[in-house]
Image (cartoon, rainbow, N blue to C red):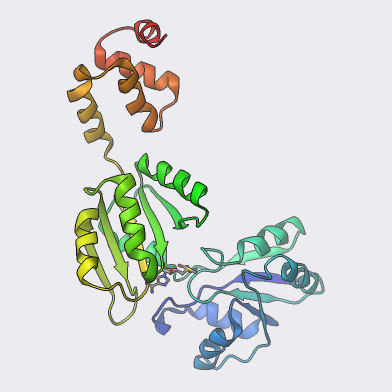
Length: 279
Ligand code: SAM
C-alpha cells in the first residue's frame, strides 16, 4: 500500500495554534519533510516529536519530489511542513502535491494557521470575495502586469511583503492604485505585538517615513467599489470622447462587447451608434 502525503500547517507565531490533529499526524508520520529542518527541529522539540526529518525547500523542490514520491510509493507516510503556516501557500509544496496527484498518491491537507486568511478576517474589508497574490513577482515585467491587474480588482486582495521591501512596495502600489486606496497592514499576527493599521496608501507611506517597518506583514487592500466607479463614469461621461468612455469600462475588466453596451446605456444611444463612433 502506498503512503499518504499529509500537508500539516504549523503556527505563524503562537505555538498554541497547532491543532491536535496536526500533532497526531506528525507523531505518527514515518518521515517529516520540512522547509528548514533546523528551524522545524525547534518546533518538534517543543512538542516532543521525534520523527526522522528531511529537507524540502525552494531549491530542491522538483528533484526532491521524485525521491519523496518513491518513498510514498514504498508505503512511507510523509508529513509536509513549511517554516510557518500552511504548506503550499507562498511556500514550496505546490510542486510536490501536483506530482503526487499525477502519480496517483493520496494527498490530504489539514486545516490550520495561514497568514493570509488571518489577515483577511482581521482587515475589516469585505471577505465575501477576495484574491490572494502572495509575494509580488520580482521580475519587472511580470510585476507590472500583476499591478495593472490589481488596479482593476473589485475583490479585496492580499499581498505578502518582507519588512525591508515594505516602503518601496507601498510607493509602487500608490503609483498604480492611487493614494486614496484603503489598506490594512496586518503585522506580527498571532504574536505578542500583533497589530492592524488601517490607512489609505498616502497615510501608510507617511506613517512608515516616521516608523521603521518591523516584523512580518500581510497587506490587505480594499477592492474597487463597483457602484462608485459606475457613478463616477456616469457623472463624467459628457466630458469624455467615446474612446475614453470605452477605455474606462475596458480597464475595469469588461470585454469590448460589454463595454460598448455599457457606453451605449450611459449615453442613451444604440450600440451601433457607439460602434460607428469608434470606427
Ligand atoms: N505559508 C505561510 C502561510 O500559510 O501564510 C506563508 C509563508 S511566506 C514564505 C511568509 C510570509 O507570510 C511573510 O513574509 C509574511 O508576509 C506572511 N506572514 C507569515 N507569518 C506572519 C505573521 N505572523 N504575521 C504577519 N505576516 C505573516
